[in-house]
Amino acid sequence: MKISEQWLRQWVNPTNTSEQLAEQLTMAGLEIDDRYAVARAFSGVVVGEVISVEQHPDADKLRVTQVNIGDAEPLQIVCGAPNVTVGMKAPVATVGAVLPSDDASNGKAGFKIKKSKLRGVASNGMLCGASEIDLVDDIDGLLELPEDAPVGTDIREYLGLDNQILDISITPNRGDCFSVRGIAREISVINDLPVQTPEISANTAGTAATPAVTVDAKEACPRYLLQSIRNIDRSIDTPKWMQDALVQSGLRSHNFLVDVTNYVLMELGQPLHAFDADMIEGDIVVRLAQPDETITLLNEQTVTLTGDELVIADDKGAWHWLVSWVVSVAVSLIALPISL
Picture (cartoon, one colour):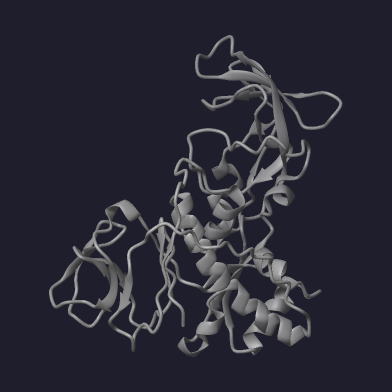
C-alpha cells in the first residue's frame, strides 16, 4: 500500500525524520518496501506569473513572454506552449536550474537551463509543463498553478514535491492498517502521541424515498447501509489536494464522486461505492452471485462469476462485485457503505 507521509502527519506528527519513521513501521511489522519523493531531484524552479505575451517576430508557434518571479525585473522567456496567457501562473525554470532527465538515473547530470536565443530572441529561462518537473502531464502545455500561488516560491515547496511516499507491505492479518487512520494509530502508539482525528460533521439523513436493502449473504456481509444523496452537481472538479493525495496513493483520479469515495477508503479504511439512483431498478440486495452471472467492471471488462462471489444487485442483476472478505458499505447518489 502506498501512503503519503504528508497525509500521515496530518493525523500524527512525530519529530522523527522520514527515514526514522520508516524504520519504526518496519520494526512494528509493517515493512517498508520502498520510500521515495513525489518528484525526482531538481532545482531552480519557482512560481512565476506571466505579465505579457507577444507573438514571436520570426516564428508562428512561439510567443515572447515577460514573467514575474519576484525579482526587480521580469524575465523574458520565449515559450511555445499553446496555453500560455497573460495572468496565468506556472513553474519557471530560472537560468542555472537543473531539471530531472531520464539520463540522470544513469548517473548523468540533469538538464541545465542556460540563457539562449530562440529564432533570434533572447530567452532567460523556461516556462514548464508538468513533465519538466517530474509530474504527470494531463494537458499539452504549461502546468497551470492556482491564482493564489505565491510568486517566487520554490516549486518543490509549493507543490510538496519533497513529500515522501511510503510503500508498505501489509500482511493479510493487519487489515486494520489498510488506511491512513490505521497507520497513524500505529505511529501514535510507537511514539506515545495522540492521533489528531479530523473533525467530521454528521449529516442527518434525508427523508426522500430510497430503495430497500436486503442482505441475503449475512455471513459474508453482516451489515450493509445505503444513503441517498440528491441534487449533486456533477460538473464540479475534484479539488487538487484530493487528486494529489489519491495519485500519490497509487489511485487514478476519475471524477469527484469516485474520488471522494476513494479518498474516504484510503483515509478511514471504509470501502464505499457510488451508484446512480436513476439506474437502479427495484430494491438493493447483497447476495452471492449466481453461477455464470456476468458483470461489467469500470474498465468495461466483462467478468463471468462462478457463484461464490459477493455482489450488490438490484432486480436486473449484479451491479457491483465485492471481494468476499470485504464487509463494508458503499456511498452514492445512492450511497452504500459496508461495515465490519
